[in-house]
Length: 201
Image 1 (tube, rainbow, N blue to C red):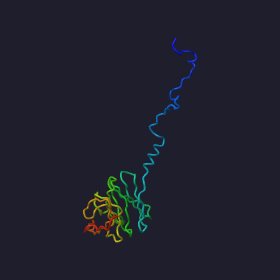
Image 2: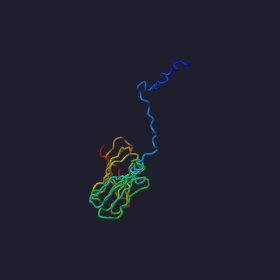
Image 3: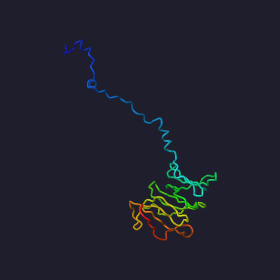
Image 4: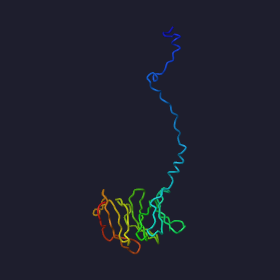
């Protein structure tokens, strides 16, 4: 007969080593599902367009706003505040278009364009009465532009940019820059002299 093969031994309840050591055995969890019931709702929530930079012209006659998330790029819309007509859509293929500011008399506005979300902004100006944006700064510059304002008479453009006004190289600090613009052939604008750096920002 084998050792310890007694009736008493056959009635003993042996516990696993984890129980003897005071530790609880590891719990087994059911595998997580591939999707959550709220996933579809969250996807729809992420697809909701975002309202960007809504504004009213200084005279109160025109409303402007931009939508982000409706497509590959942001688009700007203009509509007369007293009109129920469809808004005028300002867009550019592959470029984000945002209304940057209004001239003090409400006759013109500045647009800021950036391609592929790189924030290398180009500024354009346009009259409200006959919307036809005209570039004021370089396309895809090697620096970042912040802000943008026209003086009340529309001759001076002010903005901040992290570029050395003498060398044209990108810098860590930004300079407040003023440029004077004069019409050429009635359709485009040109800087007759170098930008004036007013100071670092």
